[in-house]
Amino acid sequence: MPFYNTEVQYRVTLDTDLNLFIVFDKKDRNHVATGVTIEQAVQELQKN
Image (cartoon, rainbow, N blue to C red; front, side, top):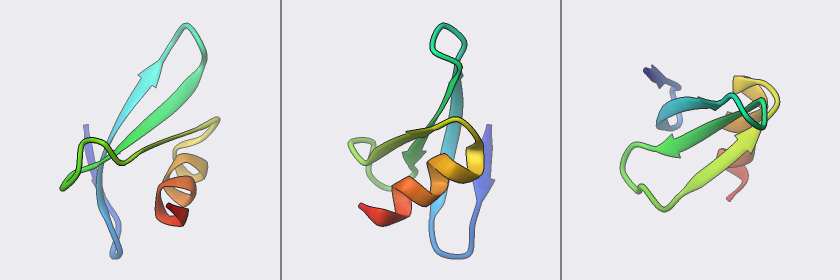
């Protein structure tokens, strides 16, 4: 499911075993972040 932010384009998945959202940078698959909420995961992605 793609979501778009003004600063970064990303794709979100949910790991149901860990109850974590995983956010992938749309332009770089290796740029990944996780969070309890989508917003938290996106913030982590933007930090890196």
